[in-house]
Structures are given as C-alpha cells and as structure tokens.
Length: 406
Image 1 (cartoon, one colour):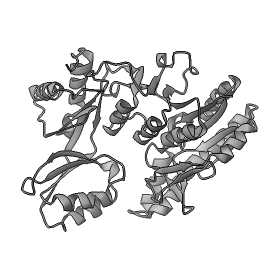
Image 2 (image 1 turned 30 degrees about the horizontal axis):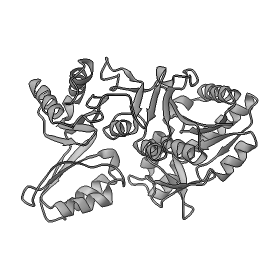
Image 3 (image 1 turned 120 degrees about the vertical axis):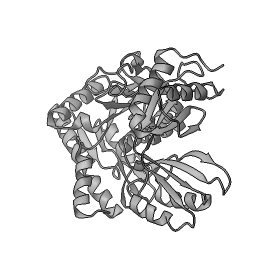
C-alpha cells in the first residue's frame, strides 16, 4: 500500500465541524487503499491567541517557555481529529512532533529539522492506523520541545513524506492552489497548475502566502511532489493540476516567463558604512536560513543596505539599541516594502528589470533599490504603493503575455 501524507492548515481545522469534514476526507483517502499520515496545524487563530496571551504576561517572553506554550495548539488539533476519525469508524492515533520522530537543532521558536526518525509512525501504519501528527514542532537533541516558525506544519509534512517514502504530499487549505498573485489585491490573478520548486520557494521568500519556503527546500532535496489543494475540493485526480497546484522538479513553462508576482509590506531597510558590524549583528538577530536582500553594497565609504522581513527579526528593540554600538551611523527605514516578479530565467537578460522599472516610474512609483536572483527581480518601493505596484506588474508581465527573455 502506498503512503500518502496530508497536511491541513488552521483554517481547515478551525472548529469542530471543519475537523469532522477533514476526518471524512481522510477516511475517503484510506478507502482508496492508501496508508494515511495527517499533519495538522493549530485550530484557526490559536497560535496568535497564545502568543498574544504570552505578550500580556511578558513583553519579551522566554523563547523556551514560548515553545512550550505555542506547541499546545497543534496537540489540541491532533487529538480532536483522531477522535473524529474514530467516530467515523476509522482507527487513528495522534503523535506530537517528538513522538513522531521530528528531531531539530537546539533553537527555540525557529528550529530547523535535522533528522526524522519515523519508527513509531511506521509501526502504527503497519497496524492499519491513520497517524495524526502535530505540525510545527519537534524535539531537539537535548530533548527540548521546539517549534519550527511560521508555516512550520508544511515543513513537518514534507519532511515526514520524505522519511516515509510517501507517494505524494498534499497541502490542504481554504485556497484551491497557488495563484499568480494574491487575489485579494489583484482581481485578475489566476491559479497556477504547475510550478517548479525554485519558483515556489522564491514566491514564498518574496512574501507570497503560499507554501513554506523551508518545506519547498526539503521537497526539492528529496524530490517529493507537493500538491497544494483546497480542503473542500475533490480527492487527487489523474490530472491534479486541474484542481490544484503541483510543485515539482520542472514546470512546463518557457524560460523567461513570469510565473507570479509577490509582495511584502512588513520589511525594514538597515543602512550602515560599517559593513562587518552590521552583518555580524544581523547574524545574531535574524532567523537562521532566512534570506537577506542586499540592495546595494560597496566600499566602507558607500556602506551596505540590507532589507529584511520583520518576521525574520528577533527582539527588534534590542537590535536597534545594539546598532548604535557598531561605531558608524545607522539608518533604519521602516516605510518601505518590496514587490517581486518570479520565474525561471527571467534575468537571463536585463530586459525584465528595465521594463519593470520603467513601468513603475511611469505611474510615479519611485524605485528605491533593486535585487535580483536567477528566478526573481525585487523592487524596493514606498510601502503605501505596494498594492498598486502589484496590479501593475501582474498586468504588465502576466496578463499581457509579456515576451520571453531572449
């Protein structure tokens, strides 16, 4: 029997009725002859509520105790879903991250998975049970409970799929796949049938609310296909891209075409002439493994400008105080945002950068900086102009069938 891993996000398990719907979908999957592992997030806004409660007690909660608190949300979901499956006649057992064999490094709040030892999961699957796992959490080599950061349940699901040799990993939410842009901002956004690992990861790191970037990196390393689908949609069909998004090694798209547009409003730009001092501090305060956008760099006289998501900064107040000690004036710009286009080979030539910059300037959106990679071009602009820029670039590069890079 093939193993299938399904992950259900917080909105899919927000209340008892939704949990029952998920249980029905899980039972339908087992009826097709699959062994099923289910990874669940905390119910609805539970994680945010718990974090808010902690902030009422302490403005700067201890990271270890915060992990103990926040990991409780997923444990509630896993137990309730197991009960719901049993009520439908299934046989289910729930495991915490540590019980399921998710081993992490020794960081709290933003731990990274270093190994998966799914022995108990395999044993229970062989006994014919559905295994329900609490996402977002694991255990360090020192036996400390750890959490994986925002979107960590995606990472749990993909890592478990890889460890079990699963046939596929299905990420289910209230959205029927990944879109070319946020439909709430860009009305003409459309669902993307197929994406490559690199494109999906770049979209996630550019601020798109798609799959977790670390999860996609895990999938890429192990070549696990991910299906992003709606919880209330049909089960996987022979052509899964018809009613969801397939993330795989190669997407059937011409080099140079833009796959999607993404943006991030909650970023800051930190500028200093003391390049070594600035980077050393960011190494201490930024989340490990999260990308920094170097917008401009040069000599000690020119200095360095770094853009980083607020979500990836810890103890922002402490960082700002420490920046005053590096022996060079530091400028902190908290009025900016980023907008990005993503696609394989879009920077093979400079045409996308030039045409996008000209289009923004034509509607009086000043470009404050540009960063590029093999799959992405990012413009730094005023935060208040982000939504307008999103609609413009989507129309310019996607709706108008922009010519491919030569």
